[in-house]
Amino acid sequence: MVDHVIDAVMEKDADALLAMVRLTDVPCSETSGDNMDSLPKCPAGTSSGTKVPVIYELSCNARYISSAELLRRVMDNVVNMDPHLFAVYEDRPLYYDADAYVLAFASPSEVTYPEALYVSRDGEIVMLRSACGFDPMRLISADTPFILAPLDQK
Image (cartoon, rainbow, N blue to C red; front, side, top):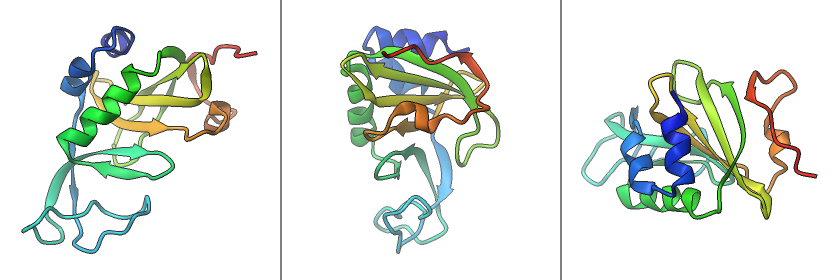
């Protein structure tokens, strides 16, 4: 269910990753703020409450991504970081009603900046996460159901 996502990252194929993204319709707000609890900002000419297709990125500046150009930059960052699979575990992403597999990738030279792709049971990318300079182990709880435990980075 996740091998095709891992393969795309390891092959540095941002186009393949983009094709795997599942956007979720979320109500927008004309007065959206910049914090993670805010709804996505409404596109011009759209009123509050209108559902807009987005993917959520949890990071230092958590945000909804609706722009194809911005999503392309995010996926380019993932594949251009010299990615190595760091861990695979299960979690429930925000704004998604089922558990997902989390594929955490890190560069061996910068293990404090992992990127994670939340992949649904259907094999679609449903959320993104960046550790923003934190030790990636701080993002994983003691009772995390690992499929592939974090690699020893010492």
